[in-house]
Image (cartoon, rainbow, N blue to C red):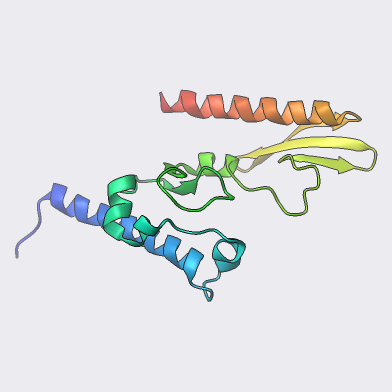
Length: 158
C-alpha cells in the first residue's frame, strides 16, 4: 500500500478544511434553504464575484489555520479580501454584530430603568463593567474593556 508523505497529506487535509469553509460561506449567503441564510444572505451579506471561485478564495486567504474560522471585520459588509480574515474564537466573539434589540447602538450597553449597564462577555465569562446614571460612563467602560481585552489577545499571540 502506498502512503502519502506527511507534508502532502497535511496539505490535502488543510485544503479540504479550507474548501469546506468556502462552501459554508457560499451556502450561508446564497442558499435560501440554508438554516443560517436569514442572518447572512437574507440580510444582504454577499460574496465578491472573484470568490465564487475556490482558487481565487484560496489565493487571497490561504489555507484555513487550525483553530480559526473565516471572519468578516465589518459584520454588515460582505465577504471579500478587504473585509475577511482568519480569526480565533476569541477574536470572533469580540467581533459580533449588534443585536437588533439594542437601542443604544453600543455593544454591551443597555438602559435598565433609570440606570445604564455596561457588560462584557469573553470566553464564556460575563463581567459587569458599569452600573449607574451616566450613559457616557457606561460607553467609556465598555470601550476601555474592549481595548484591554484586545491588548490581552495580542499579548497572548507574542
